Image (cartoon, rainbow, N blue to C red):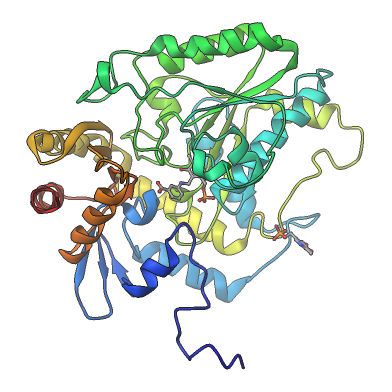
Length: 440
Ligand code: PXG
Ligand code: PLP
């Protein structure tokens, strides 16, 4: 017993990415969920306009996913995937390979997006070495990029606060400029018109370091965490062409953009741009069991297997790689996406979503609105000298009125589950408009 902790105290739990003192002084709880809604302990219903944290793409507590997890827990709780197989891991990898764009045919399983990113970066380095290009070690990320919180991910990531407290990070990393350009692109519907030329910064990095020293570029096709930044028209195609010209791997971090979020299976499919490596998590299992994955194309997998200098081709893996519960949840999730046509549904709903979102243009404080598929960003003017305060107040006022949104700084992000009804989109935008009118 720890005498200074009362039973059920809020004190012991160090909450992630949360102002702990502020939260514990004025906590908010949910204890149950179904479809588009959370329910609080005092019985209030909260419309979830963020799909948990961009992850519950099929809606909360989907009965088929719940049932699959329950059955799996009773059958095989755990098996290591080191030198031992269980059927669902192979089945899930095969099913994923079939839905992934192009020839992303080989899957490595992790437990989160952060682990997927670190895994992808390690594969990129090991691959370059395996094929005799061991000097290709530099990794290129992008300003405002979010690639999770591992040391690899924060090194290539570009969110200042996620980096500045944590020492020297990985060496040999460069960053492309971000693509946020309010002056030229404010209130774009879908992809912004201006900024494809920002991809040419990769040419400048190549000119500085030489391509013989560069392993890979990693980007989010649509930056999510940093505030919903869809790529300028032609930008991703240009990045792909420069990578091809210089024999540099292109990694798409599709942790948010995957599994229907943009109204297509993946961003790679939507944009017609084929990455060499793709990272996934979130919608992979509808978030019901933590899981991430990394997909690679055959040339990468084969080069690693053909040129291995030891029996094990990749010295990497997690205790919980390919966890049976996660595989069962993932298989059921793929069934639900297919059987309910959720990616197609998201593509259709994207039109009324865009219209509703842009109706906030004249709302109080709004300086930009961005959207693609079922992702929306509403950027507010920050309070002078107090960036983020207005965003926090909007978040709380929304929750008090029964609406969960995601706020980063003064940007409100909306990413409802793919099952969202247009009436729920209208309710979301209506409540948000009311809140913006009342928050100073
Ligand atoms: N890559 C991308 C593109 C992500 O969006 C991760 C990697 C890391 O995944 P894990 O599972 O390790 O969290 C993410 C996660 C936000 C927010 O506020 C977004 C994420 C995580 C936490 C908060 O928008 N995305
Ligand atoms: N730390 C210790 C002491 C371990 O034994 C292990 C795994 O065996 C780890 C960390 C890594 O844990 P995981 O495989 O869950 O990432």
